[in-house]
Amino acid sequence: MNPNFGSLISKYHEKGILIDTNLLLVLLVGNVQPRLIGKTARTDGYSIGDYELITSILGHFRRFITLPQILTETGNLLKRNCPNKNTLIDLSGEFARFVQLGQTKEVRKLSRRVTTHPTFKELGYADAAILSVAAGRYLLLTEDKPLQSFADHLGVDVLRFQWLRAI
Image 1: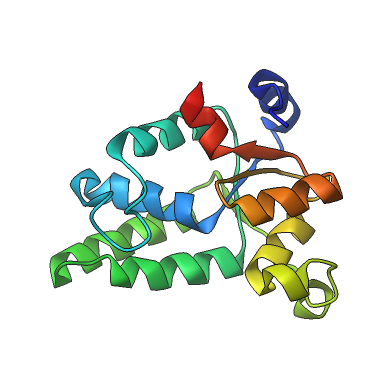
Image 2: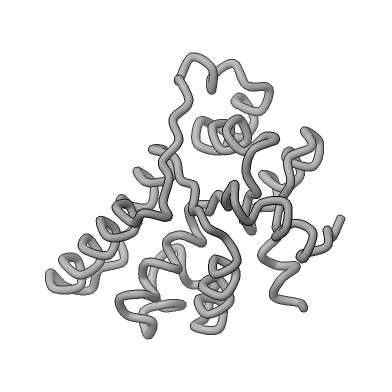
């Protein structure tokens, strides 16, 4: 299903867009050192053009939604994407800047609720939390096909990054 990007922007412009871990990682790495995109773990399937597409998409939304689970995964992945100590310092600073942006809203869901979500056993803790939080509230930006499939099944609006690449 390829929803109309314009209608999704209208519907979620004020509410916000929830950015999945890999795309947030590409955004943060690109904000610091775009040349590292495509050359490190978990960014190897992305390009500088993808980074530019992510920044363009985010420009349409007033809020960036994140979860503690996404931030934890992203923070751990940032450490793995550091060729040296200076890059780690820069990436950590960019991570903190993103978290502290007035546009960024961190949403929490109790673990007892996440672990009873119907997708928990198949998708795991982080993805179940994402679907639990996004449902009816936020647009989900992801390239994760299993997450997209479950989102469709549950009626969660998804902006598929691979679909945007093809436009």
